[in-house]
Amino acid sequence: MPHLRANITYVCDLKCPNCNRACGVAPSSAAENMKADAFWKIMEDSVALEKKWTKIILTGGEPSLNPDMLAFAEAAMWYRAKFNPECNVWISTYFHPKMFHKVEEAVAKLPGLNIMGNPKEKPRIHNYAPYMAPMDNPSIPQDHFYAGCHLVGSLCGTTVDYKGFYCCPIAPAIARVFGLDIAVRELKDVSIDSLTAQYDQACRRCGQYTYCKTIGSQEPISKSWEEALKAYCNK
Image (cartoon, rainbow, N blue to C red; front, side):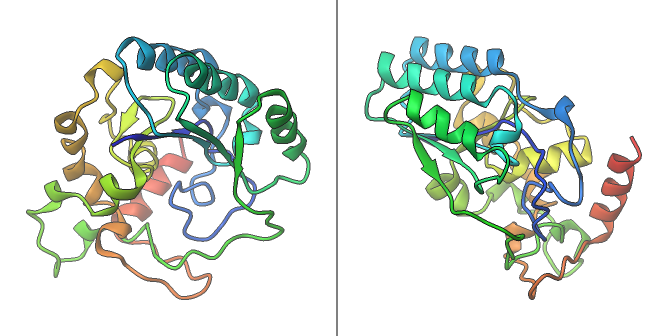
């Protein structure tokens, strides 16, 4: 899984329906922000372990809402210059009207840093329902979640957040809402086996697993998600 996505925050004020990071239904705080020094260690470990990321994406949430976003970009660009000049580094943003200047300043300071995304003035409408857990649907076989979905390796790559590494970008959002302790803590322990071990817990809660569709801005939520969101929001 040669891509690395860093969910450096889950804070986002766009509140897109069916956000696969659960930013709207499970509003986050700075307590769930990734720390810049932790990301610097990951970049240093990547060099030491000769880890060749083809792409590093700083994302969220809205990454510009992490006050240390520039430090994350500096760490990724240091890794690129030090060890892997072919690595593409991106900030994935919706062009936050009050914070996009931080992205522009980072790009100006760090030649080669790229911007991913388009300006958005209103929430994006997603066409699938991430909060419809397959485990809540009795018509879906419950014994094959170990397989994962085809997007994990071919498109999404590895994701890291404030707790550790995950098999895909959606898994850490599921883990934070459901309180799952499934993160791989250290880069040295990241492997196909350690990441696929997360499939059973993450995939059974993920609407993407069965490509559960939604219409317009509808935001269907299955029973286990309702219970988990209630517990999360009442913490």
